[in-house]
Length: 144
Image (tube, rainbow, N blue to C red; front, side, top):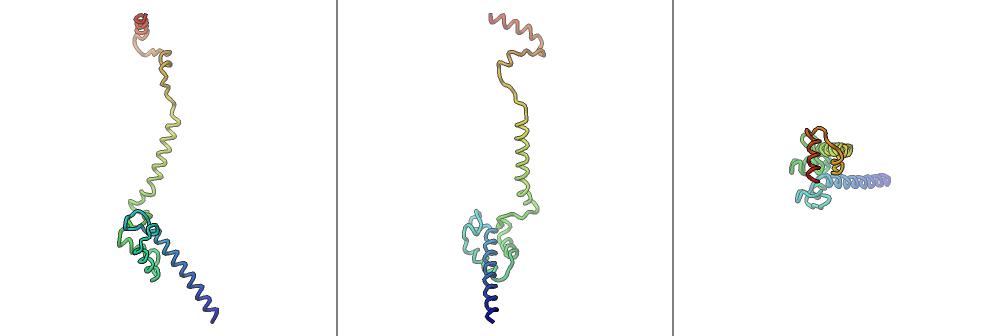
């Protein structure tokens, strides 16, 4: 009888720890509806905390508790959006933006540098300009 009592007390202790861990996990998964700026765990929203605790102690699973709050407040209550439908963009967009940014940066670094030095332009003559030699000759005569 004594062994059964010890086993029962240990199982109750582990069950209580499991409930506390489950409650903490759910509190970290749900946004606080008072201001939508953090989780229930961050804000210590006592009404939701007590509701979560009573639901877990009543034997409801994590998913049942989350479904209840999603039904009440909508998907906005979830701290991490569900990856389906349009919400997939929340997961894909940062990766696509990072890939595009690194591609543009790589192309910019690999592109040849343009020399904007004016003295280099004076030393070279462009033969594609018609009458270039005559123009240069007349300009030198005007300077003299």
